[in-house]
Image (cartoon, rainbow over all chains, first blue to last red; front, side, top):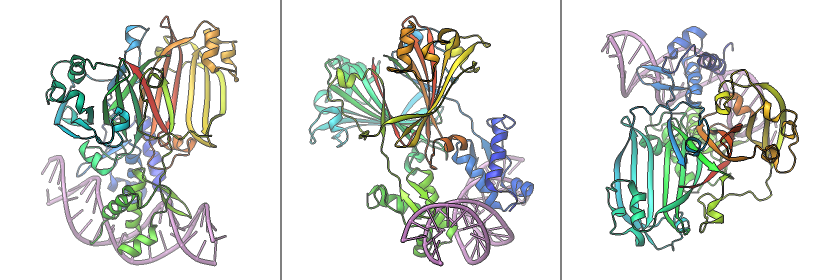
Length: 245
Length: 245
DNA sequence: TAGTGGTCTAGACCACGTG
DNA sequence: ACGTGGTCTAGACCACTAT
């Protein structure tokens, strides 16, 4: 054969990297690649698929295939020492958070038996109950994060922390009023590809990984008071951790 | 048509999730799916490709397609408060680090002009020089991480920190001897799909994202003394951050 | 309605690993 | 040598989107 899908993809990738094809631009479509390179449609398609699974391009049905745009949201965990205490506080990826705001939808609050993976994290027996808070975060109307929090039911039942509206300061402020203010937390994270249902709920396009985070919050006495599991659209987030050695 | 690639993939995914097909097991191959479902080879192939790009399966040429195994390495940043200060310190993902050790290869050390993205992070002028340390980390002979560190040449030139072998305690210990001990750092991270060259250097199979980390280390006075860029095989790492509020 | 992507077929030939 | 995955063709038909 003369031209392979891989070679076509390499050419397009190079034009993307050189900014000849800028984020948001339309790529040559399947019919165009068939004409230009004299290959079968499936071959042209495979070439574009490579870029899509690399996260470089997104397909829009009936319209075309486009160079993906990356507009990170910055999520900062920790004390933001770099900005308060330390010097420049420059960062590699420019974050554009102008005017964009996280909104919450699909909030569900209820009491459930503790899931078996969560029980040891909270130091609870297997048959304990937890207050569960599920929600989805949107930015500009697009979903970017799923989150589920688990709190020991014995601690927060019938308190404001178990109500849908957590009020000013959020959940952690309510825990503080119960004498359970989190003094610190541990986050464990992992990146992977989403399964189809996650892909659906986050409106992910192909080639977008997710970041799975499990945060355990502790009081100053070392008591675990909250486990929050999060699933983030990796195409949208930059995560920042400020840490003292 | 009677059976679609998607439906075949859904069936296999379900069998994987239910552990009927366990990690490491061989999946039905292309010929088997053709026979079982009466579809064309390309259709069977597309079904398996879905699982592969989801990171659920890996292909081995001449052998078969297998359910992927996830054996995380735990990377902990911060003070490990959960273990020292706080309670249980349980974690969601079981880490198996038994006997496996990080080894370093392909170490390159030299002086270069500072890259333009790095200069502002180190607070250096555009024409400054940096000592650059590039290396690759392996676990059990398999590459898992690429790393490149940049240090202001004016600070570390002709010091042990600019030599290939950093000696006991590593680079940060040598910085300490220069009165530049890092007191804390900021890590910015992002998950994405690798490009082909990254895929090559990390021996990644399809469907594996990478985690890109940029760490800036600061002295107690707020001076940036090191920028380290890392690229991790996300199929291998679990990242842990311990943070105080 | 015309153009785009989405899916499938039935065949071909190749490259590689295992037995 | 055989069976696995890897790539390609030339056609078909469908579904969605823009105009």
